[in-house]
Image 1 (cartoon, rainbow, N blue to C red):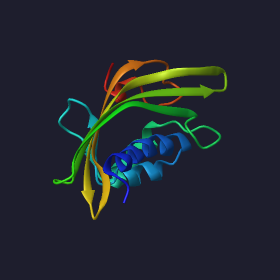
Image 2: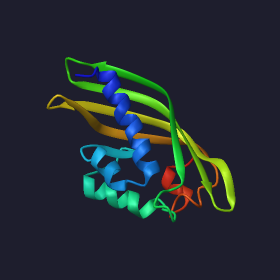
Image 3: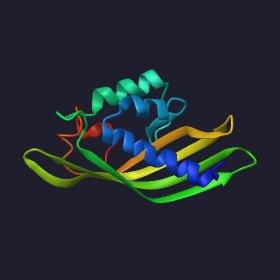
Length: 152
């Protein structure tokens, strides 16, 4: 069995890969048992169908079926409580985008605060909170305005 930290890193990086591939079903599956929301706000969204609908209604897909983004996740710090079967992680994200008529640029940067639980011997997301620190031109990434990112 892979060690806990490696398994949790894989979950964190899988999120970025699924979004960048335009696989919103994969993102919803990954977060199916989690609560997601903006850091500092008590309410969150839970349940695979609700998470999938949120993603589908906010992320702009381009001709190639992707959002034309690259989510770069860095500064990953993981703390594991093996006995309790729980873990937490903090990381930074930077989203790059290149679309027709607009060269490669950074469109948003912020932080993730995650909680994980071990269920039937496998780690899964229990909660994903994000905080947006910097917002650029997200008009070709989001179907709604930048306010859905929780402010800067």
